[in-house]
Length: 253
Ligand SMILES: Nc1ncnc2c1ncn2[C@@H]1O[C@H](COP(=O)(O)OP(=O)(O)OP(=O)(O)O)[C@@H](O)[C@H]1O
Ligand SMILES: [Mg+2]
Image (cartoon, rainbow, N blue to C red; front, side, top):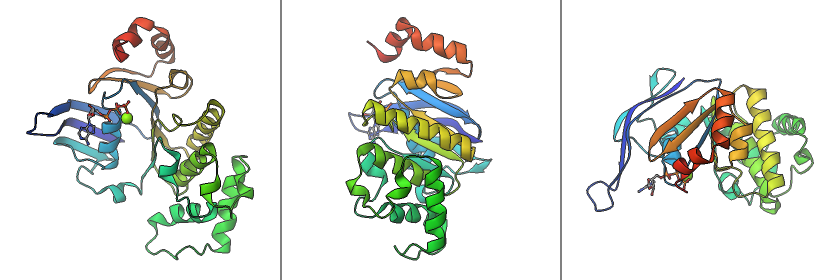
């Protein structure tokens, strides 16, 4: 269980741009849930993910992972248990390295020492086997530089890299937003496949309400730093996502 307790967060403290984004945020994220988060621009979605991953520290409050206090644990340590994929496909990959080098680096991230870029035959074989499961034809592109891949392929690689070593939580920040509709669908299917296969929890921020309707066991709606809706009821979720007045209130349009 990942828990955020009594979180207070203010940006630009002491300046005219001071902004309190979270006043007293409380949220429990069990290990077996796929949580979808929607909400308008600036409502605090990325700030929440940054707090979870340790990219920012809360001003007040506590973050625990399986009852262990991780509030001040550095970001790189959290990435042993947490995988993250960003909106920009280029952010998650090393473009000048080959696919197999990218995957091996990601897989070696928790190991005490790294053997450089020389990928051992055994590791190559196991990574190739994992890739074949997803039927994206990536298993035939092991020695191609990721910089030559399409945006959709790069995002698939970023997703596979985030999940190649065992993690508990997958954090997705609008990870399909930069892709064309077909590539976005492929990435969403891959996301679900990985979550089911590896039995991991996921927290996905999206502005795509079709995906919010289709994916996730639980829906959170953010509005100005507050969780204004938290539901596991799929029917309730569909109703809300179809309700123009509700969405108008949430998105202010
Ligand atoms: N590092 C920062 N320094 C100052 N202000 C910040 C910082 N990060 C976020 N903010 C502000 O906090 C508010 C919430 O931002 P956040 O990025 O969490 O929103 P979001 O819900 O992810 O929005 P979007 O849908 O546009 O990605 C915004 O007003 C933003 O300008
Ligand atoms: Mg954001």
